[in-house]
Amino acid sequence: MAQMQFDDIKKQNMMSVLFSLEYVVDGISKFTEDEFKLHHIRLVTMLNHMNLPPCTEVIVCDNTSLVTRNEWGARPPRKTELQSIPVMNVFIHNTAGHHCEQQTECAQTARAIQNFHMDGNNWDDIAYNFMIGEDGRVYEGRGWDKVGAHTLGWNKNSIAFAFFGNFNDRKPKPIALEALQNIISCGMKDGKISPHYTLYGHRDKRPTDSPGHHLYAEIRYFKHFHNKPEKHKQ
Image (cartoon, rainbow, N blue to C red; front, side, top):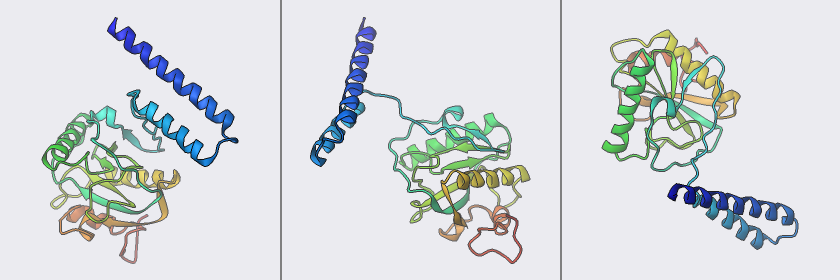
């Protein structure tokens, strides 16, 4: 009975929202600026009280195997801050923890990182926008349009891709580097990353070894690297 009453209330709220939308659309040309603002506030207030699940953007990237937050078992963020797009800066990190070569292992690692960031560091969510496993998959973190917590002083107008593992003593697998190139290309294609972006390693802006000596040596040859050698890969 309680559930039925709750569902009825949700239906009534939705009908109220639809009626209000129809009213606003029909009368929009007649509204003054103040009247329009009043109706906008009313609609937003009604929607906020309906406890609707948050909308998430469906991300489709060619040549990229993307694991969504839901698929790796992410916790909901405490809050989010929208990013201005397209971003002009791309940062490459390593997580300095476990390497992973299977989806179940990478998902477990992602959950552990998120727990540490949220519970240990008291951040609102996992720090990175995306993570990359040596299974060749890309794991959604905060996603394209959210400000991260990855590079102090550079979080806004930037996006961060973090490789699972520590690359001071070992090279990243080619399949992971290919995944990085593909997801960046996807971001440019969809207008999330500027075609004139600049690529940095985490160590370029903060006192850290990240993304590790061997991974850093690889990205230095990417076309958009901020201080690239004469020959480049991408």
